Length: 287
Image (cartoon, rainbow, N blue to C red; front, side, top):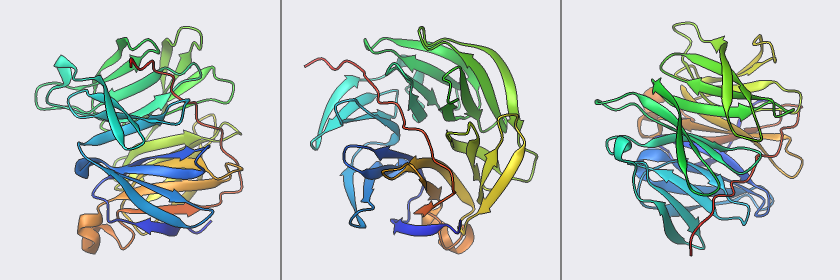
């Protein structure tokens, strides 16, 4: 399970890897530079495919387009090189940006924002009809999310609190309840960042400033730790035709001398367990 670099664009904040099942490639973003990349394992070809405004996270729509979550609460559809605005801005997020996002089984999107000097972060839910609902407030840094294999629980990370929470999740309504702490990261071990869940229900959490990827059992016990030649391990997703490859993003590519030789690169490794397919978003786009 030695991590292997597959593409190195020296990302300042490489983030949000997503496996695109129809294109058979992994996409990821460099948040502050507003760049998107993709890597096709069948050919080993990788490229930058988008450059524009900040992209904090994205989902893959059911029709294959990418739904981009950006600065000021803006949301736009990117398809065939063209951007179609969905939400121009959120008044409460004009000095903030989206961070991690995830589509749920019904195609809604849970989308979190960063804290700003004027307010703490929030978690929103974007419903399929385009309506936006505030789910949580008072968040330090909204981050990685995932669903249990039975779709009854949702995990959510607040990096500033150094905690991963687990909620009871209602698939029919998209509501969250019964919040509790799943894992709290000790001081000095970095902070929890992006995450994903495997078919066995174990949580894989990237560790920003911890230089590692950690696997937790469903009861929150650490069972595996994989180190990387990069301090800021930012996010993780399962990909490949069998969903048996982990793709891991890192940050700090503009300071490799202090952040590590692999800082800002996209890594892959085979963990010996498969992931679950990510749900496509199904947000209605007016034409």
